[in-house]
Every structure is written in structure tokens, then in C-alpha cells.
Image 1 (cartoon, rainbow, N blue to C red):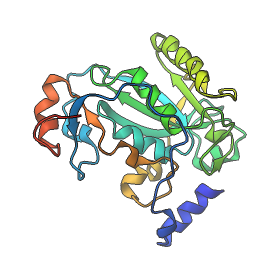
Image 2 (image 1 turned 90 degrees about the vertical axis):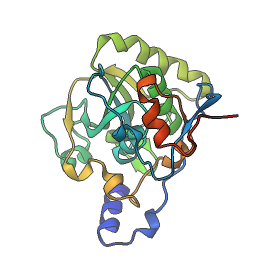
Image 3 (image 1 turned 60 degrees about the vertical axis):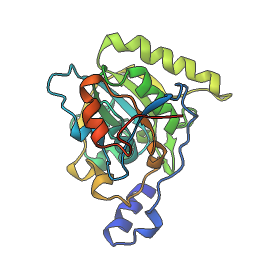
Image 4 (image 1 turned 135 degrees about the horizontal axis):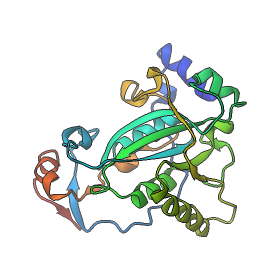
Length: 243
């Protein structure tokens, strides 16, 4: 399995083969590009680490989009995402290990739990980002990884999100001739992956990744009022950039 080979290569230090992330398999964003906003300094890997979420009413959504290393790293960078956790979702059995999951017989999907503040980023926007980085017509495969654990899906733990998720997946069909196979389903279960997998690309910046994380470079952030001074501090320009 290519992903396991990547682990071995990383361990022996041959990182050059893995030095760049893949190209995104999805389509361009359907959201209009902001006319103005703050562009973060190059050294700011995650603006959310500088924000205060103490009084935020946080929500959760669960995304399966192939190898969770890249999915976790991508969504962690989005303004308004308070936390991301790699794990295994919607399979049978309890507390599976990575070795259990890759067998495929329990039906778990590598999934990322995304905790976000809807005042800062909407569920619709998060889903739009997912479809920018996955091929929703690919059956049990994303990037170089194949198997039932690499299927795509959006799993919700709140029935209020069900209609938004199902409608978004249905609407995605307009961009493709092939059938959309991304699951839109309630979350049956979710188990945290081993610590080795958490924040993998932060700990191993040259590690395997099927998502182009650089696609978020120079994205314009439009912060809520209480975040503006912090975002401004960590931006390339001390004022909003505009076209």
C-alpha cells in the first residue's frame, strides 16, 4: 500500500520523493472571491492558533476524503476551524487500529473531525472546500490510495445539518458526467486515530499528501470584528488587500 510505503520512506529519511503535495482533484470554488481581505504572512501556518474561541458556539462535521493526513492539514488552515482530528468513522467494531482499518473488512473510512465556529465559517463553505480537493466520482480511491477506507463522505452528527449536507452532495452532480459517490450520511461512530497520525503533516512537513496545501496560499480572509486586529497583525499588509 502506497501510504504505508510513504511511512517507511519518511522514517528512513528519503523525503525528497515526498516533498511536494499532490494536485487537487476537485473543481474550483463556487463561492465568489472576496473583493478584499487580509492575506496572511508566509510564516503563518494556521491563523486559528492565534484566535480566541472560548466564547464561540462550536459545531462539528466529519469529512472523509482519502488519506486523512492531507484532509486534516487542509481544513486546519481554514479561518474559523478551531480543531481537526484524524480518525476512523462509520465502520463496524470498536476502537479500531490503523492495521484493522486497512484490512477493509470493518468498513471504516479515514475521516477528519472538523470543529468550527459557524460565525467565522459556514458549513456550506466547508463543504465547498471539500469538493475542491477530492474527486467525488471516485469509488474507494483518492490520490494514490485505494480501498474502502479511502472513500469520500460527509457525516453529520446534528440533524439540522442533514439537509445542508444532502443538498450539497446532490448539487455537486452538476459539475460531473459520472455519478457522485460521496456519502451524505449521519455519523454512526468515530474513533480517534493513533497519535502518530494526528497533525502528521505538521510533524512531517515533507510527508505524503494527496492534497495541494499551497492552494490556500494568498487566500483572502474576511475576519469577524473581534478577530480583525489579530488577523491584521499576522497579515502581509497592515490593511485589507483588494483587487
